Length: 97
Image 1: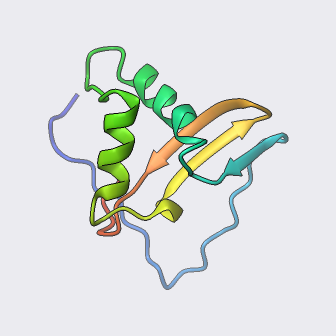
Image 2 (image 1 turned 30 degrees about the vertical axis):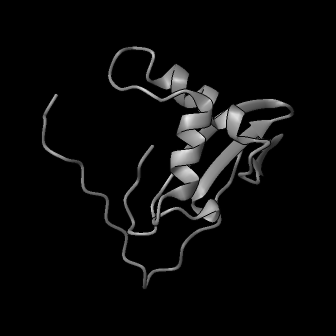
């Protein structure tokens, strides 16, 4: 495995295809009520020792008070009441998690 950063580029003049999700998966709004599900996903993802996530209240407080935070750039997906995936981007275009 390389230590070089991965650079993702997409030509924004091309049409962006509509994502197709498996049946039963929906995007949930990212709110204080859904933040625990996102936090649980990150906690599990970093459980292998390749990172860490602060306690829920610390993590959520730091996230929403950051100047690059936008709740529309937090993508939480679930199947029923089971969280399935979470991605968080900054307004600068950086993919955080």
